Image (cartoon, rainbow, N blue to C red; front, side, top):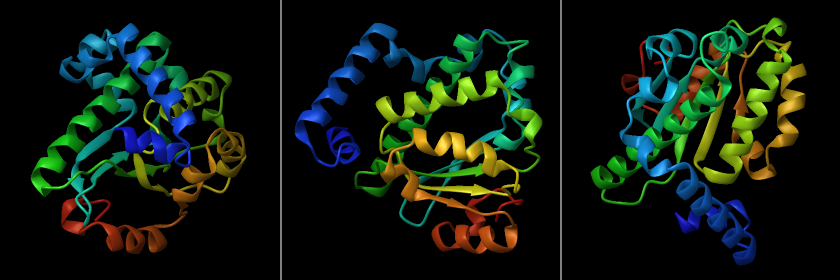
Length: 215
């Protein structure tokens, strides 16, 4: 836990300590320790199938180093439509809930591997994304999600693949990229076609570990 914050702040002890304090305060004030054991319906305030429809997410595979693989279909995520059914604060809470589930998976993998596993491989599928999804509400949500991850879940991603990325996404990416620190940006690999991303994934993850459409 402490090493993760040290990595996030280039091993500057003072800056890392500031992150640790912020994290502990946030967890105490928000009761984050409860999230891992909560049902998603209790976090969302509605049936979980709604989010499974708008933002399918798969957490189950592991890469060749034992790191959990998290796949999310962000290209199908219509934030404005979701916000018609779920309050924005619940949507942010759901993101935290997902991160806490990932934390539990990391602990399980550490036990299974007999060594500390502290990072994941993120696969973000941008198929179907279009400029109509780049609304003010969507961008505000993404910015808050990035802020949460930068502060409270820093250095969790070991490698991130953005796949099936349409050309027009570059407009959105130009707004998101400056929100990420250099270390995070350096871990992100962007691919437009499966001709390129399938071999890249196969270098890190045995195809048999992945859902059929990705393996």
